[in-house]
Amino acid sequence: MRADAQRNVDAIAAAAADCLSRDPEASVADIAKAAGVGRVTLYGHFPSRAELVDAAVARAITDGHAVLDAVDLDGDPRAALARLVDASWELVNRFRSLLLAAQRTLPPGRIQELHQEPADRMRRLLERGRAEGVFRTDLPTSWLITTMQNVMHGAADEINADRLKSADAARYISTTVLAALTPPGHRVP
Amino acid sequence: MRADAQRNVDAIAAAAADCLSRDPEASVADIAKAAGVGRVTLYGHFPSRAELVDAAVARAITDGHAVLDAVDLDGDPRAALARLVDASWELVNRFRSLLLAAQRTLPPGRIQELHQEPADRMRRLLERGRAEGVFRTDLPTSWLITTMQNVMHGAADEINADRLKSADAARYISTTVLAALTPPGHRVP
Image 1 (tube, chains in turn cyan, yellow):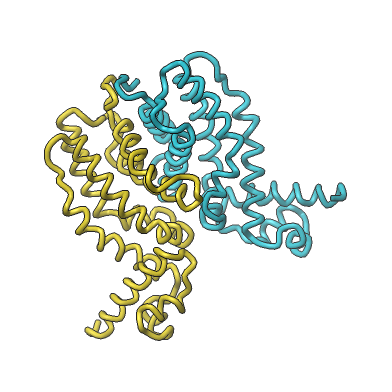
Image 2 (image 1 turned 90 degrees about the vertical axis):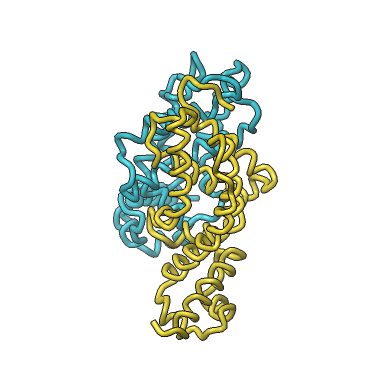
């Protein structure tokens, strides 16, 4: 791809992430305008709304790497997990309107596929905690990661529906997740 | 509404629940055909796809009451909850393709609103378990119910995406939910 074409693709993905995280129904015309490109150029790179939403989610997740990189994952795995979940939730909450657009547009499993990198961070920490005996080993790591994502994405839906306050969500999520990860026979923190 | 019109509405809702639980993209034409009515009649009762999906979900949930009514909710609240979650999961799993259609079509929070009746069953049991000291009281009941729904609906998504086996899901779900409900300081069952 030529450099100017790549710049357009980047600008469109950034504009899509921005517009859709304010309004899940943002139109292709709005996104083209925010990216400073014409609709024909936009459709040339992203022929369908699904491709545009996909690129926006990928972009939002890439932008989130810096936030997750700053999380200290050393020390007690439970405390480290609480920090990672808090930082992850901050990102999910910021992009919850984009998540809604993705749930409406992308095929089953695609949202999880796009979360490969954040899931890998969770996985490494979970595996350390399992090796140290503080996280359960009777359920697969993949299921535990899915559960954490579902609890966070479900909280985002509840906020979108005005049934949960943003201010309460972080504590509810980390409390619930830490209990769900506790090995059978061990005490819930 | 006249009796024949009511019969048409019922037949359309039942056909929609049936068609969408086999194919989330089932067309209005397919549903009209399965209901034995013309498209004009169908559109007369359900002007939009969203209204049709809404009626299908409501119908599936109503049909599920009989399954949930058969669950013994007496005795140890944890064992009763495991039975209720197993039966609920059986229903969610049976209708997971309809759930996908609903996630794509209905406004935020509407799926939860439609689950009022099954949520109330969960709530009564949770409240008994909280009173008996076996379920946590440091998080609101509404959040605990949301969490159970998110874990089940998330498992359905995973199966839709071929990332989880139906045969494993029931055990993963009840194990996870029972841990999440355990009060701080108590041992996970």
